[in-house]
Image 1 (cartoon, rainbow, N blue to C red):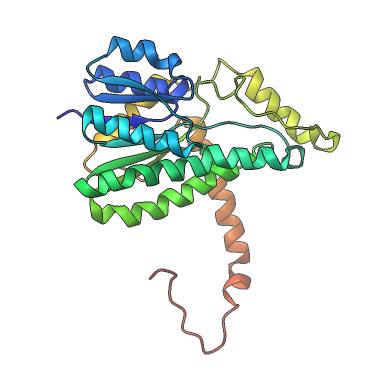
Image 2: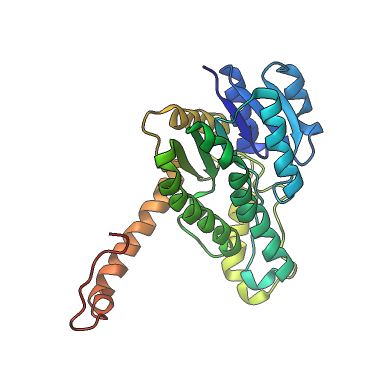
Length: 285
């Protein structure tokens, strides 16, 4: 039986690639975007299996309306893909308080609230799959992306805990962590810092050159990423985490190596902090 996908942010990038791949399979898709006219042509070309819906994930009314439209048209939601998000590059101190809050509203709170809107539907039928597209920056943060990565780390923690809550109810959770792909991440929607501070240029400029200088030349193919996501969703034992791209795996392995070395060098100091008569059990054990 075909699946019903509700995908946020389908106008470009991973959301668009996944929507197109899902439609090619004969599945049904609710194409959401802040500007639904950007996805209307795709919906019109697949009238039996797709509808276009306006959705700003930070807008409670639009979140509820998107869920309602999905149920009215297709009767269920099998897969929620939280893809909509916003990038940023700059020293943390360079962003305003308003920008910091906006980044979390879109990348983190929007994901959490969208998930909350869909969970009752999946819980009632005891099945479903929630896919959160974060970034390798949700596992390994680097200078220049501290704000962006903070939102992605938050989603990682949210999704990991959520997995334990909903798995007994027949609902799966997968986090997708792409590296550099040819999407619009470095495009106009990327949030620019309110100010520039010279003291941070030595750290920020090489990253900025990497991001914008290599735009359109990234190694990752969004179409192949979409197929990998579908494979995970269709798997009998779907992964909690799906890292995409050799560059992403390289950064992850580098971080793990550095962490292991640091953990080991400070382990004795760290564990010698209990009361002498304390009985220590693993957290959550």
